[in-house]
Length: 329
Image (cartoon, rainbow, N blue to C red):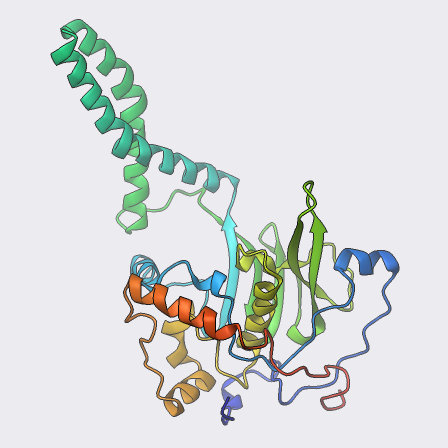
């Protein structure tokens, strides 16, 4: 990749920079049990290359992202400042599944019920009594509640009605490119916050009941034994070790202010707002709407080409010595 001048004065002093960093304190000796649970030695730190986990960027498509940005008034969980991971609380999840159930009732079960009712009327000689009994059972107790739940959800998503008060997001973790810190949350309260280079990434494998290996990727703070790590495998549904290594590469790339952000659809609207990325894009004549100009077929073809190209690329960039390769702290 071409070397670029990084406008570091646009960032805080605490940001991660793979070209200019202070040596970290030596990694403390871990016991046998800790090594076993963490999967042995951590993945190496590197000056990240341009590879990205294709399994992570397959969904949502650029069209889906544009629609979501429009509905959320350009608010997003990932931009030039930070990546925030979270989920709905338990009541929010229940409400979400109710809306899915309600939509299914209104769009699938209701038409089927109407056609079935017409069949009985015309071919089985149902009278008014039977028809009224069916309507009395299904309309007020199934279809009307389903329509109200689904309708309110659709209206609130489009901003016509307020979101239900119990639809609260639960924060899990945050990667801040603009501050260089990683924050872990529990019950929406900050559990810990440390500079990015104080973490190590572990690729952990474990056999299933059928003897098939499954993999997880965890970011662990090097100098504290917190019981809550940061689960990086949640970035993708892939169980391929290569893809999980590319996730670690992508995180390092995103946090490294001496390099442009990863070239993925989710970050396309933020590229012009990040000083390092904007300089790189201008020097390399990258189209501002490279991803967003694609339709679904073009996007699928681009992912196929990217996947083929990355088969001949290392999953991570050149390794760096985090403990002796920088300047004295």
